[in-house]
Length: 293
Image (cartoon, rainbow, N blue to C red; front, side, top):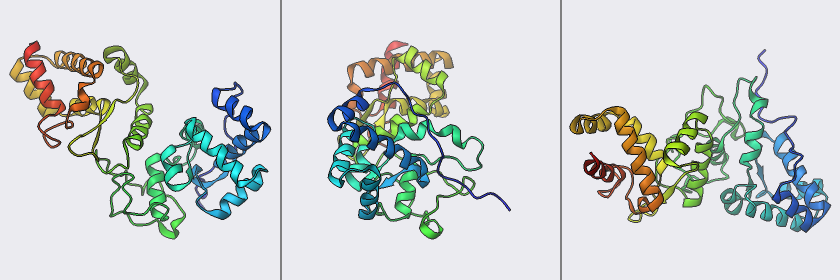
């Protein structure tokens, strides 16, 4: 009989060096602050899919009891940890969900020898929708409406059954949520790619902006670079029309992105291509490159 999937862990790395957040929490709440934070991490470890739903009053009461603090003090500590960027701000303020991306990143090794993978941010959004914590009308991310709730409403899909949500540039709840997503995606990029972005373009983080004509549509310069590289037909037509090599195209693209990044003019663009509006990334690059060649 096959061993059942596990979506929790028995241990997690604990960094001994004290950071600013830990120092602040301990100074403000004394030992209650330190102990509560550690117990929150322990609870994230042993809970399936590594999130806590404190929108459930019973769960809030139980957790406060485990931390040996009042519910009011527990909420205050969590609010401070959100401000200190230890927990996801959007999920906490909107749904009273505790999700710590740094914690999830730190436990990936525990899943190396498992058939199932650790849940990720988009998978969590889907799971919360499936168990009706997030209603389908809430535009947290453009997840396919055709996804059926998971049997029993309690289990996350197995890897072979899981379909990656279709991610577009619209229907995010806020620019902050989109930026959180892009930062997560940036962290997953190959280290060589991140090194090249920093060396060639001076980029070490996402550069996100909102379409001013359609305020629910968001874009990221890093994603635009990736899309441009993947658009072989468009890139090939420019190389042919301008009689330049692929290497020259990439050099021009890097120079262009560095220039618009530093001037922040990209924040006035409608988006990536004509589908987003006439004033887009591709049209600006084409016009700019014509002057450079």
